[in-house]
Length: 134
Image (cartoon, rainbow, N blue to C red; front, top):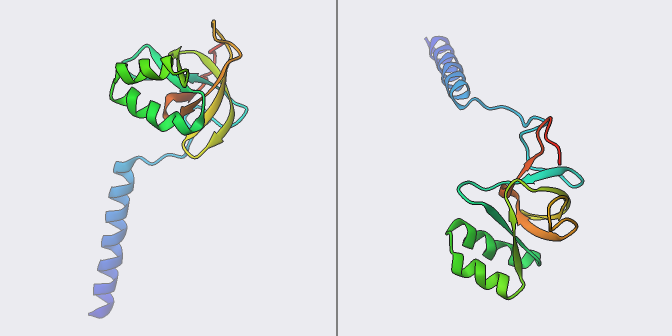
């Protein structure tokens, strides 16, 4: 009788784990679905906005992120006036040149701000897709 209970418990666990795993659809990161790494060309991206704000100092990166997430235009304008951050059009190509915790240091590769560097939270970067050129 005890063997039957053990077998039923193991079989039930396997079925449960299979169900959970198949519903989660866990996949490893692919070449084009990951956080960009140092030296990689990436694209600045943000949902529902035309610009991504970059901080000049990595210590200001979190405050800028909060202002972008809260769509706090006054705070962002204040950062621009204080020369602690600047706006870059979404879709701009950048090269990741450094990282620190959740922020990445990037160098702008195209547009009127080409060559300028700044810090941005990793969620505003995506890897360049195949066929995308700067």
